[in-house]
Amino acid sequence: MTDPQNPAASEPPQQPASQPSAPPPAADAPSGAGPSDYAPPPARPEYGAAPPSYPPAAPAYGSAPPASYGAPADAPVPGKTLGIVAFVLSFFVQLVALILGIVALVQSRKAGAKNGWAVAAIIISAVLMLLGIILFFAIVLPLLTFSGEVLQACQEVGFTGTVEVRGLPVDCSTVAN
Image (cartoon, rainbow, N blue to C red):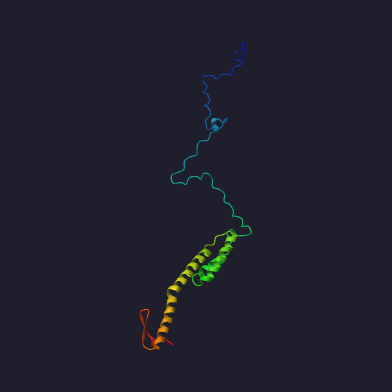
């Protein structure tokens, strides 16, 4: 409230016009800081100088702790070695490879793992067994029956001279008794 008898007592004192007023504080300066507390911006680096790192470099960390004991992360698949053995044998001994491949596949499936070696061994040994059976009936069996026919024809002529079997001339003197 103002005093009606002394209006100047309640108002703030006025500076005379001859004194310059202080400049208002800068927007960057913290409140309460005067013009002498304000620092100028940092100088620009020279051309070619390395720029200051911002943010500062991260601290170096130590090495990781050693792995805990227990089962390794990539545990061996049960039946995998047997599957590889079956795969190798599938080219030479198909029946044995087929049996080993089936055993390896069953072991892997019980463990919940896949075993491509065992599957490949089963497929290869089965295909080669079928090819062997087909070749036996297509090549070996006719040759065996042909030799029996030659022997029978040469017996009829007394193992002398030449006989014709399946359209082929055969010298009976070369056929053993």
